[in-house]
Image 1: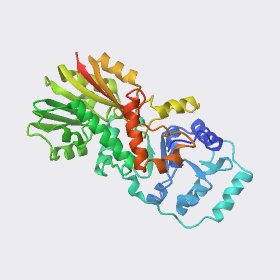
Image 2: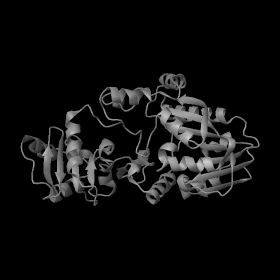
Image 3: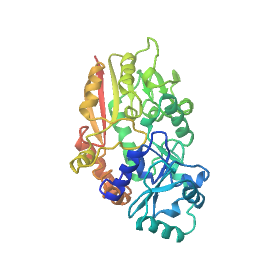
Length: 388
């Protein structure tokens, strides 16, 4: 679910905190505030680490049970209310702001506090992919060592899961498209950038040689144990941006589910170009900034958003094609994968995805429509390009 830009009470709170909070100050907030504030301490983190203090707290008066009793006591002891409306009370360190909130909106919080029910101990199983289950931090706030550490924690916690029918349809269709573009890999030398745990090896049976590249040592270790790893293979630990394999040149370079995850995509593509032979091919995917849902967001006057906290940057088809051209690649074929017209739309997504993401018939329609929409407007684009 994206931030509810259609709700004035949420928007004004996010704007207030963004305006006054310093970059090094921590903020406790409902999960969706990461879209606006980039780094937040989560309500469920107050149960995982009750002693963790914060500089700011955005307290939703209707969600008090989601914050541990210990943390609420600490907020009230350490912080003062500085802003309030019908939904939220915002707390900050004493002296941080000259103003202090009073009046019926703060009094309503006190009344809700007295009526607060039992602690709701959160189920953290669903948070296995988070580097820190108590925090949501957009990856575009990290430097290279921090990104490597975050991905290590991510893979150590189990990596990607595809629990919903929508998620399974997406990954199955994406890999089917990639496999169709790869064709027969027999005799090819393959470079797999950001290879993860080696998931694409299933499409590379018969390849003559394989080199996987991963920023995460944990993921690299998983890839080395993949049963589909060819005999003439190695997996190296390196950021894509600084990859140096000497004079090695490959027939096929894969940059799949990765362009949105690297700090410097231009540098990563330059590395791909150095190690793809002239006439060799590259298959690259990208999260689409011009997917139908993003176009609808802009048409409704809402700000564009990254699909999830791990995405550092997303692209239009023309942007990705232009970058490939600058690094010596000509696009030869392209496909679209999935169409999610409701994804992220305030007031729509939170309702629709609960039904549609698990409905097999609707999921299949979204898969078919993604192919028909093509790479310019599908959720994800897949491009094959030839090295000049």
